[in-house]
Image (cartoon, rainbow, N blue to C red; front, top):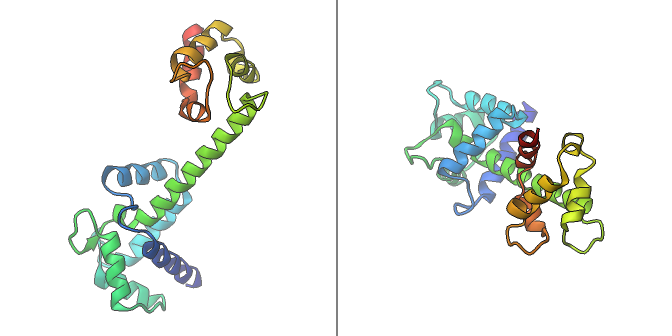
Length: 199
């Protein structure tokens, strides 16, 4: 019971912090929740259990009354004003006085998306450190080729194919170097598909 109460407090804090203009909405929200489900993300499973707890009549929606009663059962007291704010933040698509599962996932999905973006940034940082051998902030074609040589799947790819990939795909501004932003935009799957095409 204490873990649930702690989770509810976290949910309330997240909802109060999330501003309307920054909250996930529409297709972006559905896509993020779908990615969490596909990745079998632990928070998706836990959130689904919590949603079912609040959905007292099991109609796949949480009403304000169900939310208030669920919080009360957990020993959490909230004001009408806070509850109204929570419902206003969660009940968006459509605004019908009920919160469906995707809407309920909004704070969790937003945090998940932010974590994924931070991870992507960290991956890009590591990639720059790996490829940028002379630490000048740019990756030359030679540095790119040498940096890929440690990957067994790409050792068989001819240097010409890798340099073609560099020139025709990765170097978006065609200045002969890859910037941090260009490294960030490279989809590794495209590079691996180049290896399959050469085989």
